[in-house]
Length: 152
Length: 79
Image (cartoon, rainbow over the protein chains, first blue to last red):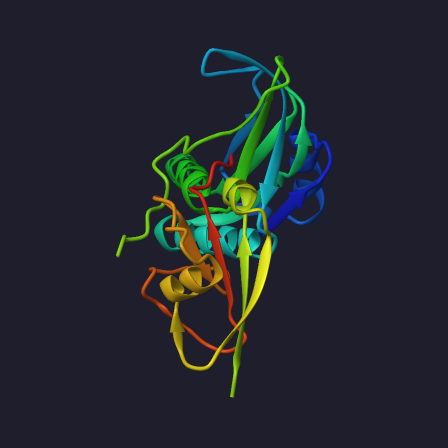
């Protein structure tokens, strides 16, 4: 299991290859690999976007990702996982996130991968600020059903 | 004895209040809500703000003890 927060450009395919050749657990039992890669678009909500800054809460980010992987492992038979997430300044077409899940059977790989990605989007403390081609900046507001704590 | 609490703010909330961190001293056990009020007098906690203590999500009425790190931030938008 590996979690990596990455301040520079990363190549998700190289990450997978490097992980598979060095760290992968119990590789003989693997029958399915599910890979999700999130990439930055050059448009959002009808506007052309030329860049983005991803802020995060160091420490809490890793802690929440570990928790999500643990929850996934309780629900599906997972052999191994690799999560890489970008922070800092990002340009269109660059990778933002990689979630790779190795299992014996495809159902577990598909389901666990989706669970990890959905939970990441709603619970892990990352925030995106877009830079439009007009030079205006704007924070992305809740692009998913975010985790809600109860109001008092 | 005084309790010392570190308060952190992130993203748009950090920009709107103009600070990324406060160190507050309390004489008695406090709650997350009370920490916001002390750190930001007269400014209501913006709707949808999330709170964490020691990097775990908490409810706003959760208690806070000496040495805790409390964080306030808007809904997350990673991935």
